[in-house]
Amino acid sequence: MKATGIVRRIDDLGRVVVPKEIRRVLRIREGDPLEIYTSTSGEIILKKYSPISDMSQFAGEYAETVSKILGGTIIVSDTDQIIAASGSGKKEYTDKHIDPELDKIIQSKNRVLNDNKIIIPIVSHGDPIGSITVLPKAGHALGDTELKVAEVGATFLGRQMES
Image (cartoon, rainbow, N blue to C red; front, side, top):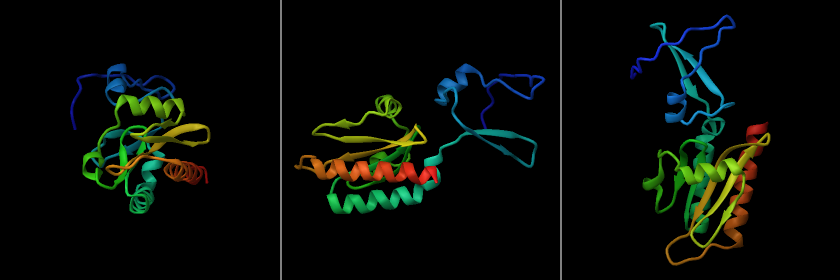
């Protein structure tokens, strides 16, 4: 664990402020859920909660199946990092943090469609929780089939989080 040198007091309601610098570095926004853990040595650990990461095995199986059928690269992310990837670019994307461009797309809840990629945000209870990205296999263009598969996957994963 890395010491920050920042000390905060707990107020009379039991609250503690997470400093702005730490929130910025860890990409924690107002309203983001945090998981609270305790250690046997008395530490309190706050971790950014990702509801979709609980479904990482399921998301991985989805990405693998779609990649085999469509032949391209399929990437499933939460709002912070890639949680599943399959296809020719799997190693390049697995366990990487998402870039600011993808974060902006996810937060806007708008899909991106062009010859190079399809990005469909995953929305649960009206909140953006991640995305599905489809990249074409070499020499092929993306079309309606890839779009529909990504839309179905994003809708399905979003609904799984709601139940």
